[in-house]
Image (cartoon, rainbow, N blue to C red; front, side):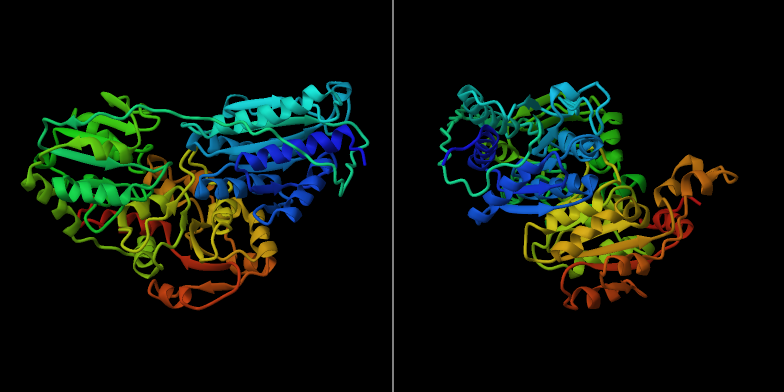
Length: 541
């Protein structure tokens, strides 16, 4: 049986992706993507390690794929149809680009003769995401020349390899297609793709001896491999205090947490000032800690695979190596009293009430190594201030562009990577921004507990100067929507629970349920400001 060009080249495209380590695919259905979607279905049927998800909402699909790729640190494919459908992937592509998540967009397109000529559902899709994609290419799948097939095989493997090189990124493969769009299904002609092997060599990082004796480590959000055990051992042996961001995946009983609140309360005095700060990872959740380093003119080295990204422009040395490799090669003799001084900060009494009590109780009741996704705005800040990570360090968030769009879908993508129940901590406005994402929870019965802190609006704005513009604040910034969370749960056939008390969370999370669950905690935005002012025993009233 012969095979036509469309079928052959599409199969080569998909097999090249599969050989490059792509095993997760998210499809947003549409007419123009017909041949790729159908042959992708065949690929999934014939390969048990291929996971295929269908999400009818493109924006949700983009973030769902992002959640999988972020958690597994593997490339994930998004397949979409022509027109504005592809533009709906843009927010997820932006987040993936900035936070270095390997996302691959297969954008099916109208052919050249329909471009800029009044054809419906047609946009200039080539490189439509611009600088947000690390790589971009266009393939003519219906081209019968053998060079096209070889080009597809080579370029796909090459581009996937390149987006997996630090700093990782996104890629777009644009696929203009003419009708007829039906491929030959169940065609048995063998598809042979020549493997493209990449050998990476790197020189050993030399031993580095530090002269400073008051060294502090700031472990920021971790986009790479875990290094918690190495860091914990290094800090203990060398008496080096570690401030661990909630997204560092490196918190432990001895790491300092809640640095933003400690600085805000004025508890980090001159006695705590280090000679050198070694900073790992991406930009910390705490804005104050970078401001403190710059104001006090404390020397900062940035150690990371893509070191040197620092919007505060205070880093004086960028060392492009992973934290794990760096820690194995550094020799330092640190001041033990300096170490003890920092350790005492974890013993400062914290008055945890209101919204902050949810991440506090969550810290006590989550299972070992349970995955938690955290929304932006107040949720991630409260987690950074009160969540010690005594049971789990697997905390994730979309801290690239820091948006509140797509959070539900990203968390559901995270939950799809494990059979263990995952948790999402989110506010009512962020829930509203991605309600469509809940359909994936229903469709795939994904095990996610969604804890909604409902303070009827945008709580973070109450902490900003515009909160004093009484005449305009509620309309322009508070934006109360008066959502009935129970009705949202009914719409998607998801179990709903309202917490009467923060301690009810233990009972709720220990109650078995199939699929997702919505858990509501009602709060008050005005009271929340006062709760935060009293958090460290220091008020600004």
